[in-house]
Amino acid sequence: MTDANYRIAPPGFTPQQREQFDREGYLVIKNAIAEDDIARYLDAIDRCTANDPKFKPDAFHARENIVELDPVFTELIDHARHVGYVYDFYGELLKMHLSQFFVRPPGGAHNLWHPDGARAVPYSVFSPSLPMQIKVGLWLTDLPRAKMGNIVIRPGSQHEQYFEGYDTHDSAPDELVLCVPRGTMTLLNCNVWHRVEPNESDVVRKNIFLAYCPSWIVAADRLQNDAEWLQTLNREQRIIMRSYAYAYDHTKPPASDFPLFLDRETGLDHDADLYHERVALHRRKRRLPHEKQQERAAAPV
Image 1 (tube, rainbow, N blue to C red):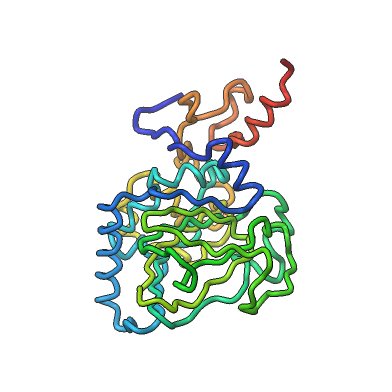
Image 2 (cartoon, one colour; image 1 turned 45 degrees about the horizontal axis):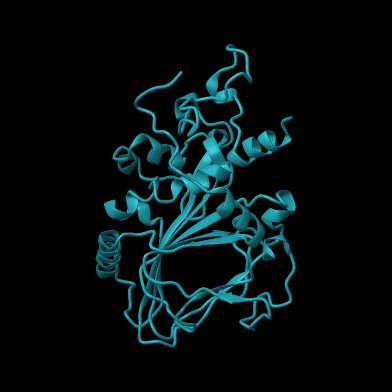
């Protein structure tokens, strides 16, 4: 069954991008954000900070659950620029884990070495190969050199649950300082060890982070969203927010939430020839792109 009201999944990883992301734990895509969009995102950040009594121009400032703050941020929930990438990993159980913007003026706070997500029992204990959280970064400020509040990562470190530099700001021999132009989009496996450099420039670093996860992981910036606000969302946005009243819906979403997207290759809402027709759509497994790729590689020639 297909329905014109359902959207085909937006493009995701190319095979080359997926190979790098699986190996290194990150991806940098330059010129991903149009200048008009950059201006709109910066204006939205400025609107939010202007109305926030906690904002101080000379101090680090962050807001969470920003998709509920401003319509410009709301459109990012399912933006075709990036949602296909995270759908590649989480498929029909895709969920927004966290949405935030950061304003880092000269000086200010900067993070020590850490992975994102659970610390006492890290995500990688349960999922050693696939990330349970992916963070999309939208970079709105030119960062052409180090010491501008850049993110510093250790490529390939997503498989390391222990790191001697944890909770320090010490440089590591294998670290990479991400120096990116405005308009860059990054994707980060949140098991990758990373830190933030101090901002010793005269530039205020502004950026947006959107983290995604499977629907059964607890969100980081909310328990539920405002009911009236949810009514303003399109179907895919509402599903991805996963603002369920019944807790078990996070593990077994209601039938009305399927399909989230139609298959890119077939346009179908299911994988053909896998289940008897008696099995309801929301009870059927949908294969992820890497599973399909593995099946094709294993198929006899």
